[in-house]
Length: 291
Image (cartoon, rainbow, N blue to C red; front, side, top):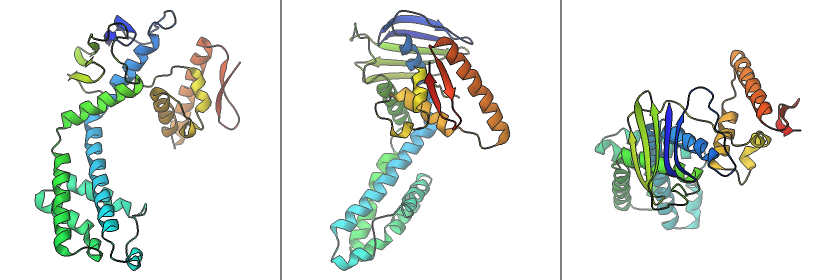
């Protein structure tokens, strides 16, 4: 695997062969961590990006269905007594919107309007049938506008968002901002290329699907947040991704736990060899760095 970089953030040009353990050495503020960020962005933004695009559409439809129901209900209440009839959707009833959105994603036009009509049936308490039918067709039109979005456009937006978050919107060359930033990843002779102009115009080419995510550890001190990352403000996108993955992938079975402990032990040993101090796990299972 090889990574080619041109005019990306602090890096004017670099060609890096990634084979096994690859060490990148250099002075401070020369772009070493930029390489890790680029790799993380390319892997994580494109991993199952087609599924992510479909999920984003579903979430948008779910939000649309819920918003229009709530908006119609609150703007058409006839009297205070009816507030008891239908309450604001609870966590349980919100599943109805998620289920409806999923059904709509796979339905034809006739079935879509049926699903929306069934979902909005209790609006009969506050609006007449003609108004409710008009609302259902209006919502259907908005739903179709979401479904008609090209998947490639949604995928490109997701990829661009990931790069923007990791680099805080500054991807182009800091010293030659008019030049095009390029990152080319070559895997088994296949190319994945991202080109960026003015930190906002993306040109993406993919000849191969990304089958794995990447984890980037910028500093072992991040382990201090291992047990409370949900409440930690100011962490970078790559640190949040790392902590989320570490927290979400705790095996439930005995064999998995043993394998995970061996991997963690190897990682901690490697970190201790290249940093001052040691990464320690205490009796409560908490991780922290110490000297």
